[in-house]
Length: 321
Image (cartoon, rainbow, N blue to C red; front, top):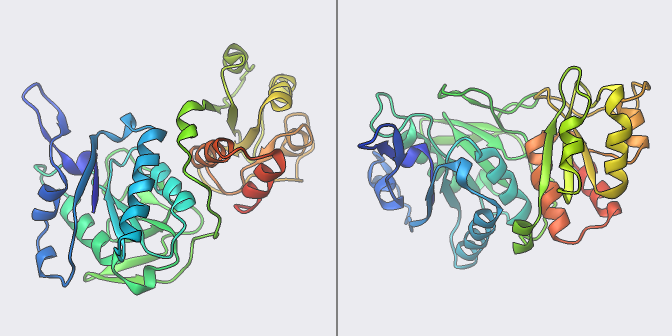
C-alpha cells in the first residue's frame, strides 16, 4: 500500500482548512477489519501532497515503485491518492505498469475527522479488490464507494459527493458486496508504454474550446507546447474561426482532438463543415476516441516522452476508439 496524500490523509490545520497529515501506516491502522484479513500489507508513504500538486515526475516515481513491489512478490498494490487527479494517475499506471497483478487506486471525498468519513471503507474495499483473483488482468482500477472502475473510463463527476466517481457510457466493472469483489468486465487494452523520466521535461497543453472562441488563448501560446490536446465542442468540433490556427499548430506539433462533453467518443465522419471532426482530422489532428481530454493528455505525454512517431501516436489512440 503506497500513500500519495490527498483528502484521505488530511486533517484540520491550526490555520484553517485541511492539509495532508497522515502516512500509510496511519491509514492502515484506522481501517476496521483490515487486520483480520489474511493479508500481509507492506506500507510506504511516497508523497504527502494534495493531488493538484502532483506532477509527471511524481507519477514516474510511483510507477517505478509499483513495478518494484510487484517484482518483489506483491500480489497487488493499493495506492491512496487525492481525488482531484486520481483518474489521471490511474490511467498513467494503466499505461506504464503492464502487469496482470491488480493495481488499485483509492481515496476519499471526506477527510478522516469528518462525519461519515469514507476513507476507511474505500481503503478496505481497495485491499479486497487488490487481492481478488478476478481483478487480475484488468489493468489499473479505481475503487470508490464500493464501485470498481476501469482506469480508462473513470471520471470524477462531482465536487463533494461520496458517489462522485462514474464511468460514463460504460459503468463500473464491478461492485464490492459485503467486502467481496464482484467483477463482471475487463477494461484493459493490453497497451503499455515506458514511464520515461523525460516526460517531466515536456509541456503538453490542454485547451478547452468555448462558444465564440476565436483561438486567442491558443495563439498566445506560440511555441510553448510540445503537444496539445483540444477539448472540442460536441463530437469534436471547433468554431470556424479557429480552424486555420488549429491546423497551423497541427502542422508543427501533435494535436489530439477530444471532447469536453464528458462522455462518448470523438466522431470521425459524420459532420463535414469547417471545424467539424472530419475537417479537423483531414487537417492532421489525431482523434482521442473515448479518452477524455485529461487522459488523452496523459497518453500523449507518455508517447512523446518515449519518442513516438506520428504513426505511433495514431496507432496508440486508435486503441481507445
